Length: 368
Image 1 (cartoon, rainbow, N blue to C red):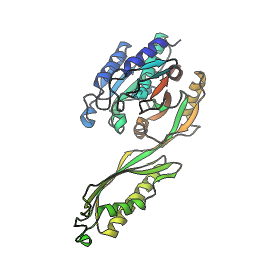
Image 2 (image 1 turned 90 degrees about the vertical axis):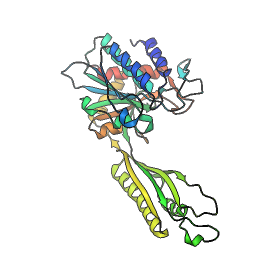
Image 3 (image 1 turned 180 degrees about the vertical axis):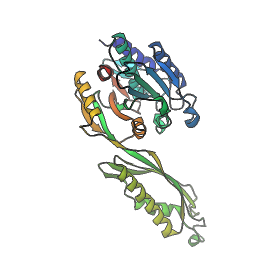
Image 4 (image 1 turned 180 degrees about the horizontal axis):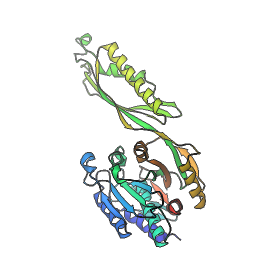
């Protein structure tokens, strides 16, 4: 039987430790200590030198049967704001915050369940493969930790990431890639009342470009959005510069490329029409991925769900996770639901049942 009291206490203790993005060090050291106690080989990388903060990604290797293929298990250590001074409250089957902060189940639920699954396997002398538990920093601010993982430390070719909403048993089979659009339209300033014809309005260029873009829902796999338009001028000045921030996402990488090219074409045509320029462009954030229902690893996860008494649910996501970066590096990683609900809000909560069921699922995945 899973030690439910220990599972709940671990989760409660974890969410009480502040770990907003770039401030994960104290929490990371606690997780490292807990894994050392169960015999894991623990190390950190130096990703923080690239992304900021004061601690790198955490690697915890639990040696298992060397005749079995190793498996990666992962979750991220950072939380969104407001995530300081979290006061967890248990009401029946539900754990939530006091309403002034997030709870931090995103993603401390995942870390808790991985730790408890390993504890169970060792305490019950299960036959299991080598488990490479990797806990990333800065996931919430652009998947920066997983983008800068030291992949030479990871030998597993398949892995589980616990970072999705939905009950235990939810299996994310596809997620989009993302392009970021950043830049500045440049026109020419002039007095808007005395000599407007001598100016080139950067706002007018931007408005024309954006109005010609296909945005929001493009198709079932593809979305695009302009999130920021920034300019501040007096009404009697023709605006010379306008900054924009936008994005495109798609679960089909060819569609993603096409959408990005379309957005840039709209910008180019608007600049040519009004005589302005654009400084900036598209940057690749991460690639999308897809698994079929017949994929061998998806089948393995579904079978583990059934052994754990859960009903597997295949789903697709509209957002990225550390999985995107891992897949791009050649690891067959799959994101699983672990019960986190209303994440990124002060109403965030999780059920105790989901903590238990997620742990049961992990146990079945490693049990051989």
